[in-house]
Image (cartoon, rainbow, N blue to C red; front, side):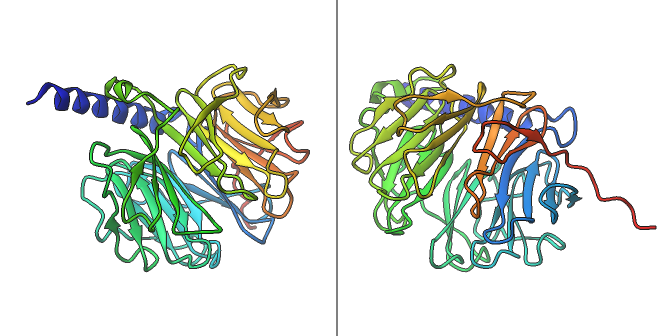
Length: 348
């Protein structure tokens, strides 16, 4: 084997092991690791979370929860709500790819036609902003696309020749032909609905460093909701921003305690307000990332895996931790309170 390809293969194996370790972190106690949060687009009482073990649903704003089965997969890795048909839920798993529920989680069926048999797990689902039956999935063997709500999937990796692990995807809601993919080799952009991808790593990571083990993983990508030419990327080596659709990236947030960024949330009406999560808790910026403040009062664990903002009330935030479950803030992150995933009392 050519030395260059041997090095690349070793790098991908190590990065795959790193992704797997994220999926398994916190599994000692069931439901303590919250890996994904999905909020109903219109009903404030309904929310879903994925733990390493199962999908949970609350119908009373987190007071009580119903646990759905863990399917035939070993771990649940992500959960998403169809924004136009919110009774339809998608779950990504480790070992069994995609499951879909048409009835709010009561029944689940595999939706894996076209997905490779060796998809180890699904990292994220992203819906077309107008036609929600069009879905993009980030997986450990690449980017996939369905045009029929998951009945059939097709690989969309043209242009990502040296990359196999896609960790995150983002879509421009004002121009849904434009997408970004975060990978273990940096960031790619597509201008034709993921038919062809172009690497856009200028300022993100030098090309020669991509061959190194654990070079860079892009955990989260979020577009400015007002000016989508501005894009933020949370990576294993810091927070980055571009103002020109990825032509040039700049590192921001150098005063953050940890460079690892696991999640990003941007205020939909005030995009200068940004929240990020990582191993040092939740941080907030009110000036487009120039300065940051830790907002962790009430959190008993600072290792943040997932963040979400309520669509109906931007003061309400949810944080999923890797060690102490789910938390909610109703004051824009100033204080947090735990939301235990407890079952409703049994009917007498």
